[in-house]
Structures are given as C-alpha cells and as structure tokens.
Image (cartoon, rainbow over all chains, first blue to last red; front, side, top):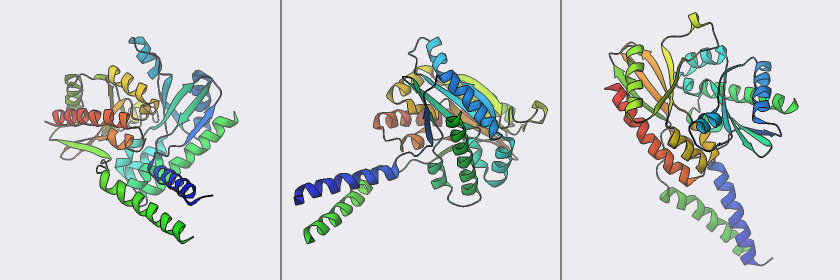
Length: 151
Length: 155
C-alpha cells in the first residue's frame, strides 16, 4: 500500500474514532413488531423490572389529528418510586430525567427503541452518588431492553 | 516508516487542535430560573400563561411521582409541566426522528423556602451530541423559546 493510501485510510479511521467519541450514546434496541405491540412488550418488560408505565405519549396520532404527517414516533415514560426518592436524596437535578423516557421510532416493519443518553448525563455528573444512580438506571434500561428482545 | 509515524502525529495534532478552535462553546445542560416568593400553584399558573403567550400548547401537568404512588401521597412540591408547539414538533421530527428525545417540552418546578425553581433541560445540549446540524439549529431556537418562557414565568 502506498504512503498516500495509508495516510487517507489513517485519516478516515481517526476521524471516525474522534467523531464517535462526541456523538450521542443512547441505549438502543430494535425488534420487528408494530408500534402497538412494542408498547405492550415494553410495558411488560418494565413491569418485570419493577417499573411502571407512567405515560404513553402518542406523538404520531397527536400530529395526524392536527393535519400533519405521521412521524411514526411514540414515547413511553416509565418510572419507579425508588428512582424518584433516590434522586431527591442524591441529586435533585436528576429529577429532570424522571420518569425515564423511551423513544419508539417505527421504520418499515421494525421498531427502534432509544433511551435517553445516560453517557451524556454521566459526563455532567461525574461524582457519586449521582453518577452511581445514573449507572443503576442505565442497567435497569439495559435489562428492560434484554427482556423486550427476548419476548 | 518514519514518514508514517510523522503522518500519524500530524493527523492527531490536526484533529485535536482544529475542532477546539472552530467549535462553538458547549451548551449548558440546565436552563433555570427562580420565581421568588411564589408558591408552586402560583408558579404553575404563571408558567401555563407564559406557555400560551409564546404560542405553545399546554400538554399536561403531573407530580414527579404521579402513578408511582397513590394520588393522595404524591409529592406536591415537585411538579412537571409538559407543553409543545405542534408545527415545531412536526418540523423537528422531519429533520430527525431522534428529536423525539427532547419532546414534548418540559419544565420541572421545585418549591423551595424562598420560591419556586423552574428547571428545563437545554434542548441544544441534547442536540449538540446528535450530530445533525439542521436539528441543532432548530434546537438553539427552541432554547431561546424556553428562556423566554422561563423569564416570563418567573417575573
């Protein structure tokens, strides 16, 4: 391989690495189901993690009802009393992240589910106990996603 | 070999230095203001009026532990107010469906001994990591709307 080609490959690789370091890192999972089925499956998965569906926000139907195109997007807000009490005690600014949000985006026959970007929050709260709490919530969402996929 | 090593060093140097000098300063995570001397009911009422005045629609209000505890046991001192502008929501979602991660708009109200803190997550902080310049520009406008609503609600 010539020096010129090596140089280009190297530049491209490093650019991708550095770009990736600053981009969002929400947890994500996808499954070939309808939006409605995804909501049901996620609700069950949340219950299995001792979490409760607080609110389903049908952005798709809300926009269609007002004459806009269907974005095929819904939101689920899930939570637990424990999470609220821990946030109140550890770092009240974390209450802004509760109830936890799941973003559902349908594309063709697949639903993509995204969490909030816990990595970005952890960068803002590098000290414990806030950082520890964020890690715990991230683990709960990971377990919820594993459950969702296994159904 | 020496040439390759020099190339690596040069690429690292350029990639580390160039973004630092060209990028705008990072967005702050939290937008906040305080409504001095108000209780939480008065602060919620003022916020709802400010939302309408800035052409947004009230979506819902709830306690932070709504549906997690019986209604009678809900915490009264921390409330969430959700609102949106459907045209702006539609535009943002067309730019990038991941915009849903900052929708609908939300302000958290926390009652303190001296008044009520009104807190929002800066949408431009969320969008700066999404890597979509068009969405980030939209979110910077949304941030200005938040600031205007928070300012009016706290007056």
